Length: 103
Image (cartoon, rainbow, N blue to C red; front, side, top):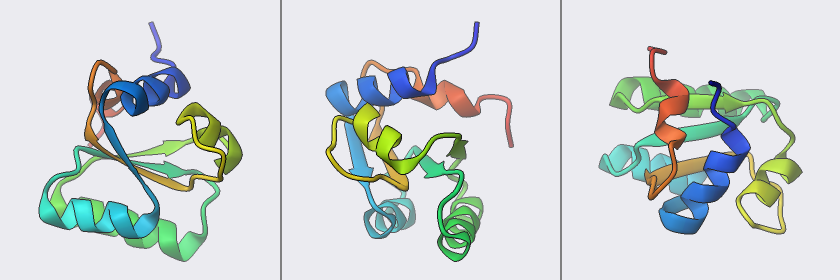
C-alpha cells in the first residue's frame, strides 16, 4: 500500500515539528536535528541542488514531492507557497517511510 505523502505531511505538521523554508531547513540539517527534507520537484534548480548536496553530505534523506508549492502549503495547513520542508519530529505520521529503501 502506497503512502499518501500529502496526508502524512499534514499529520506531521499537526502532531510533530516541521520547519518551512530553505534557510531553516539548512540550519536544521547542519545541526543534525532534521530527519527528512521534503523538496518541491520544480523548485529553483540552484536551491534544490544545494539542499540535496547538503543532505547527502550530512546523511539526511530527502524526498522530491511531485506537487506545486501551493498544494504543499495547504497540506501543511499554511496559507503560503512551500518549496522546502524539514521534518524534525514526525509525530504520529509515517512521513519518514516515504524514503525507506531509497539511498
